[in-house]
Length: 136
Length: 113
Image (cartoon, rainbow over all chains, first blue to last red; front, top):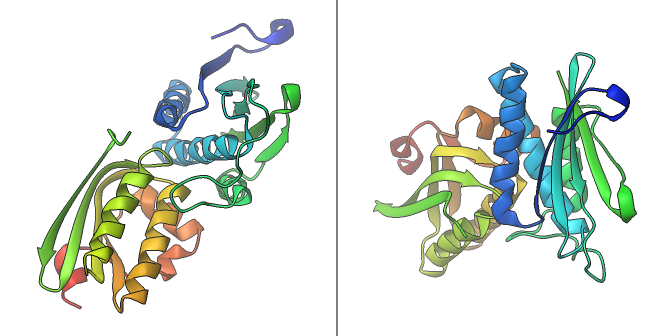
């Protein structure tokens, strides 16, 4: 947990390597934060799916040796989540579609948007990508 | 690594039933894919995937199920889903795949077709 910028709300964040074994941890972290804010269990299930999709997208588009940050911050009556594809030292972007039966990267975001309508993917620090959505 | 996923198979008539327990995501989906693909390669064409024990499934898991359904159909059979829990039902519904897969409440129901 870190203090918010300019006295803003605290930011809860988890940083892991951008590797699939950490995706379950990322989901558990997001669910734990949501429970702290007394979100409904149905919303928490949606949140876990959204975070998992964002992690998969980050792996598909991120640097091979990058890191992953899952963060949450209270804004008004909403909890804003960000899945940040952190910078890596790798030479280029990921291989695109990943997985045993590759899923197009756009589909990950479409699924998130089906759950949280304000979902967006925006440029982040160092050319990385941030997937952001809010739950209430 | 597939520590969060347990896949066991059994025969039931002309069907091969897979009992899946745990979470299916990008990390564990390759394990499920390997088990299903091996069954089809070994001659199974009618497969029932029992999802009663699956707490979580994302698009990686859906991809595996779709690919496996395709392989079963190519072999003249099908792939049915059994007893998906509410979160899994939701992702099937959002993606419209609840209309693609036969979905049953019990293994008995799925394998009696």
